[in-house]
Length: 341
Image (cartoon, rainbow, N blue to C red; front, side, top):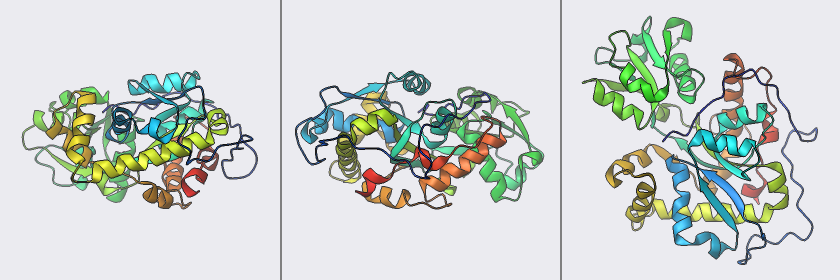
């Protein structure tokens, strides 16, 4: 479920919108209502998606033919996550499945993605795991913690420390690639690690008695997974994206319905070659969000209950960690109109 890869460089912000504080998109003349059932876009909308439950969920609609039923011509392209970011940046994709934090990194490098949907927030799949002798985050003061600096679980660790009255100055960070952290955790010099599933389960297996002291479930809304669209594609295909959002709502209902949940998990787990029972656990650590949920999340506030507030927080984190050197205008990268219509 390798959905995150922050870019380590000092980047300059290039914003392509007007001077107000809300992302705006001009609808093309003769736009067709979102309730039509025949595709109005002759060229398919290309959307990159990758291995994270909130994005693998699109596979259900693909296999069920729900996009055709909705009358939208869309093509989902499967990527390793980092490759999808590169494809979007080089204009090979119209839209991308991306964390709100990584969407800011893209924007800072001049590749703007406008968030029109929040698929989910991480609800336990991101974890701070410690060896058996540590019972709390506070116990890690003065200890060594393995983390891939600048990635989203560095952000999670930062929040865990703050919630316990600590800062990074109170611990020693040991930088390592996330997929190497389960092995790093076995070292006598490492007391804890910050990482996401399935790496978290591997770390727990590698050190008997180890446990998660803090997870993304302790900070709902810190890590949002989204659908972000290029400004050009959104302006040209606004009605089609509205249909895609309605299909998303159908997907969430299908997964959450006890009568169809097993079939949903089978489709998703098959896509990523993971046993269905294991995938069910991963899905439990991901809070999928319906369109009704999105209406609340797209309300502007400084809290993590809002995509705005969460992104404001990540923006400051990115500046503090020199991922880019100029704060972005977050409101320009979020478009609530489709959710609210």
